[in-house]
Length: 184
Image 1 (cartoon, one colour):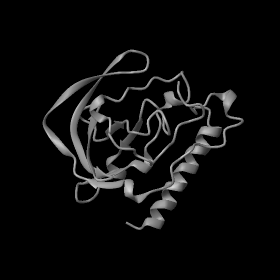
Image 2 (cartoon, helix red, strand yellow):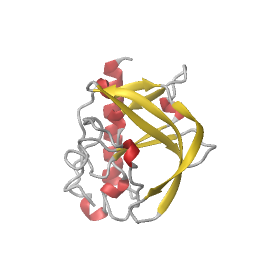
Image 3 (cartoon, helix red, strand yellow):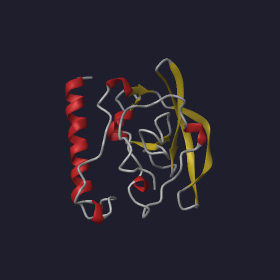
């Protein structure tokens, strides 16, 4: 991996997201808060939080129920898990899909920064095959792209909670930090 090119691409994606949040009519930032919006806060890019991992697929994926911020129950398919090491600690995150025919993976997580440096309910990773699946079949799991769910910015959005099986016992100081006063 070319670290300089990776950092440039990450910074460009962050700038584009800030422009969207500041200007687009579909921004999750309430319109009355966009005038003073100076951009999201991020941890500095850190290649130590970028992994290329095998998805250890479950032999018999099961359906789990996840409550969302409105109190409704959603169903997701637990398709596999990623195992990796952060700060010398072994970690595991479950990957989910909402449809068995889709290839995209949803990886929500909480970590030791949740509620302090980052959004209390946790952050998300979306893994798209065209962007995150390598030629050898491993997945790029880059916590530098971890983002807050839109319910972190406005009560007008509903987001699934992170199941306890994806609560990490280590801090992940990568990706988006908490927003404003933070908790909605």
